[in-house]
Image: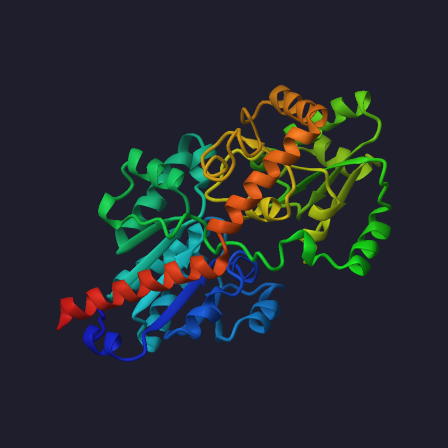
Length: 401
């Protein structure tokens, strides 16, 4: 089995290979983090499959990028090829740390790093699809997680709720588990996501684009348009409420995902043809839609630690979200509105209550804003992660001296 001279690896400037399945996970959820590590003592190499966000990744980060074709689905032949390419890459680059995020990158990256005896093998858990799976799919996903964690030396759930779930289901030993800082995968850019950072000219452009009506009340959702984000319940509740509240509008900001967990045809048709549902498939100005919205509604079935809630909170936008782990790591009844997951009636009632108690919801939003600004600045999160990297490197030096 191939291995590296671990003492030599850890004495020189440590090489960190950061891997996600697709480049969008580097471009947005981890924006800025690789460059920070590059500027604080690490030689960073980024790895993902190809994709339209790849140019953005290369523009944003001060680190090289290597393409390894990976798929999000189970594709045995393609997966074996990706595993081979990762092993070849690790043997060439000789990293001190391999750090993966997203399920397929985690499985392949951790196996390859274990095979090559990379000294520090970290997998970040930012969500667990198995939480909403059943039958054979559930068993396969459970096996994937257990294999990934077994191959890793460190497992970093991005919330305390995820850590508790992993421990409850005995996916790995407690000694491997660490939550960085207060949670999250990257913290929040509080300079970008702040009401005072909104430029009026750009805001007016978006108002024109969506034909903004200042007399209307806008509900906003940001995320992938898939079933397990609660899109079915959200659209159904909106249709019912619209009959009672003519001025209500729904903004959906996010891409359809046809391959994994697609929404039903009737809901898709409603989104396309309901004039009061505004769909924006992609934007790099999500904070402007938050500035225009009255409420942020997030009826997701499962989450790790949703950065979008931090973003909405930083924009002082009142939040209504499902009562699930991840969401409840951020939002409580004192800082927002929680409703039962997969329950259209509960979602509808929560929206009605929020509309009736607008001042109360604004006060809760102010309270949450103050907490998020204090605890989740991304620079603070990066420092916590850097300290953890440095600690692991020092521990490995002592082990191999």
